[in-house]
Each structure stands twice: as C-alpha cells, then as structure tokens.
Image 1 (cartoon, helix red, strand yellow):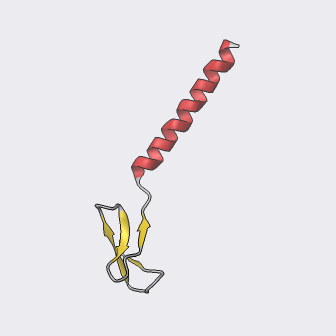
Image 2 (image 1 turned 45 degrees about the vertical axis):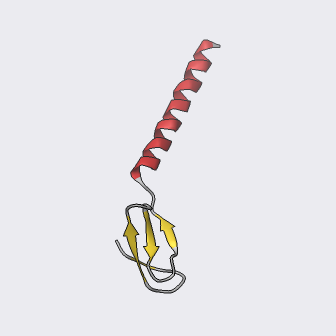
Length: 59
C-alpha cells in the first residue's frame, strides 16, 4: 500500500528488504508492523503467565 511522505509529500512505496515504506525522493522510511513481531510478543506474554502460575502453585 502506498502512503504519502510526511516530509516531502511524495508517494512512499513498500520496500520488502527493509520491511518499511520508503520515500524514493527524500529517503524517509516508516517501518510497517509485521505479524512476526506481534506473534512473538503474544507468545512471550503467554509464556510469562504460565511461568507465574507454576511458581504460584509451587509456593
């Protein structure tokens, strides 16, 4: 999906190498949130909750 560059008001295109929208005119980049990062955070939160439950039961 193309966006408008906040710096120069030109069209920004998605660059899969950087996983970001890049303005070809001025070089401004805006990272696009990925599914991998979101999934990793969810797994970390769930793992922490499970560990907390196990510790509470052990006491």
